[in-house]
Length: 89
Image (cartoon, rainbow, N blue to C red; front, side, top):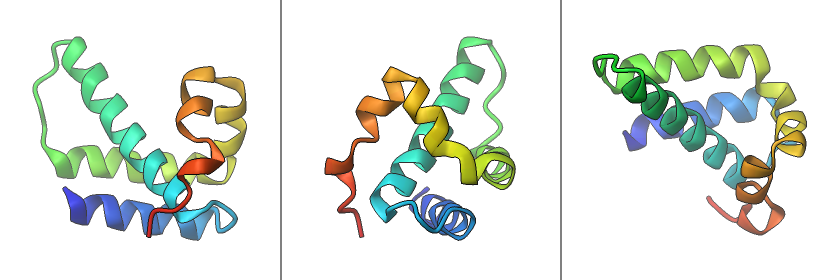
């Protein structure tokens, strides 16, 4: 999964170069986790990490340059994406 996270983080950074690396990584992990937990709650069969990565990749392509706007409006994510966590390399 680490390799998928790294690939998706790089994709997000390419789409939104002003985003700090740590924050991009956090976004990737949150998007993957939210998709998988929502699917599980809905009773869907687990389709694997590659399927999740494909969906998150599509989200990044569509909304990657606008993620900061979403965080500003959603307290759950704003708390997780504050400036103090931007040290991930």
